[in-house]
Length: 480
View 1 (cartoon, rainbow, N blue to C red):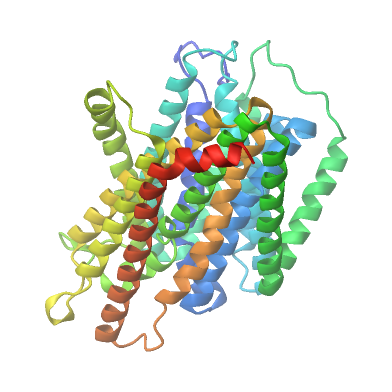
View 2 (view 1 turned 120 degrees about the vertical axis):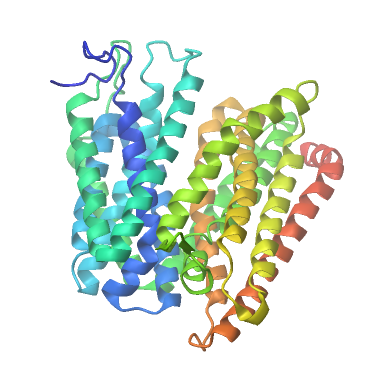
């Protein structure tokens, strides 16, 4: 029995396999994120700081390659083939990571980064292709459904990997992820179908040429992982080129369009900064959970990856289903709150979360931080995330000219990559030389999180201050 991507089986008349495929891929990606620093520390015998550096590099590359993944799907491979190749490369890459040899592990990370870049953007594209009509109003519900299932997948798979990895070894957790990716890839190959109205774009170049581009990308990423100084140089060059390109677009626009473009650039910059602080969860925060938090619940020692994969998605589901709908219905029913105010408040939520961690680290007798403080931290960060991510994306879509919207959405995705790069730099300040001294470590963590709280607080207040002067500034830019 096979499931059709558009039509159901006789047993499940409303079933679409994308509702299983996308959450499975997403759950695997976030499960890897949750235990990556522990696995790489064990496999390559590297220090805490080096593990966090590898994490930030790989995550930056996974998001940075999404631009090429979308391009190859549009110009040659198509959506389905791009997802299949993404799954195959990701699985092969994770298999290579079983090797204790650094070179082979780096090849695996290059394969995984490239595979992620292929499947991440095209999975979301595939959700929209379920419907015959490109403007079908049911699209919003489809994306919401996938979002909910994806978080449930992260909660289940990530929590399972956390407990299995802690008890039996991280290689077993990696095996689970590989198995799920292979199963999801097979499901894509056997079930993914598009409606008759879907017209595959005429390829601009052959599949062989696309494979050559992918191969060149894998080699390039491998070299960047081998030589971190080169990675830093390439990242900074990419930031400069992106800035120049956005500036070029700005001057190509009419005076009225420039106001919207300038606003979009501001949203992209704010989002990149938010990611830099928010994405401490997979690196510095993971080690903090391991060393400074009392994780015992009813006799169970909950491993850090399980905490990251359970509490965070749980709050996303709860807040997304309760607080935000009620807020939109009763607070913003008459007059929606401006996007800049929400983004400024998102940074204030992040600041509150870091101050919570800082105060939680100052326990009497240098006791471990109670898990309740961590739950409060996740709640505050979730509120910030739920405001800034959709608001920034929606305002970029609204404010940019139609002929530049795809480019600016790509810049928004690249902002995640740049944010991860900055997150890696910030995370290095969490490393304490005298790791064995608990009292010193707790004090150091308190200072580290307090510094992050001050930084995000200042950024949030500056954004709220800019909101009051934005009309004047944008008017000046429009007349430039």
